[in-house]
Length: 302
Image (cartoon, rainbow, N blue to C red):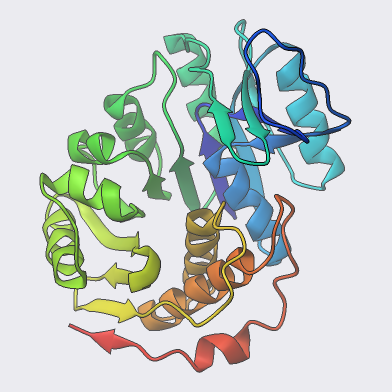
């Protein structure tokens, strides 16, 4: 079983306007939606569609936390969140004809006692893999993530900001930075495939057995103990890139849990991500029949 930890989940509030915002003028809309948000939650949603057993956890509070729990349960995503005294954050996206506005709240402060409850919750579910993903609220820091990684026999996977990756000290099975995070974690810029390969190798020496990096138009790489594997971006119509990194990680983890090779894991990850970016919206598209796409991908080892 793969358990995901979203330290700072959110309810994503999206509004569609027919005209751009104007100062001191009331804007009205009938087009709005609320969705569970957070990278770990996204990973669990993709894993469910991929037929992988998963449990989503993290910290929630207030009426938005209750909404998040109920929405995930309705979507048949098993969840076991830690209730806190603060309030789950609300992230707002306003889509206007000529502009897009994003307002993300920082989130609540997490007490040490809540972190201890989280570790006990993880132990109770006895997962094979623990995924810690997304931004960190106040009270959670790299040492907290190290404590989770060291608390059990599970493999720990992280998808966090580059500066957080840089400060982690425990041993990790895998990390999944994007291009910017890869540069931030290794103290340089990643402008080319060669830069990415060099940075991934450097990050491996820091305590990450595998490094999976999403590189946009340059595809994706996986640094392993034996080589750095590269798959170029597939020739698909890109409609919406939201969630692409989470989809990539979900595919990689699915193949790894099933005992597949590193090559198979990277291929499956890229296949899932390519399916996700080819459709619009926040809902998870069907992820069946990916085998043919994955098998046809060219892969190069460096």
